[in-house]
Length: 86
Image (cartoon, rainbow, N blue to C red; front, side, top):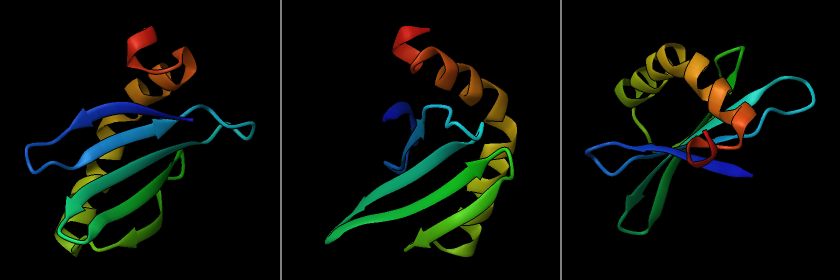
């Protein structure tokens, strides 16, 4: 299950998973482009970039910083079933 978190001004949509059995949460980044989406995924709490399709290094660096700054809130919402249930 993916829960909406925020949409950035450049139309990048950030979603997150529930807390998995191994205590990880996945943060997904998707940006619509002409023929589909750019996509990236970061795993918490390791902050490991699991994959990137279409984003440049500067964007990925932003996503990594975003994950660090928002991890506590994302874990909170993942535990509660998304922002709408908080």
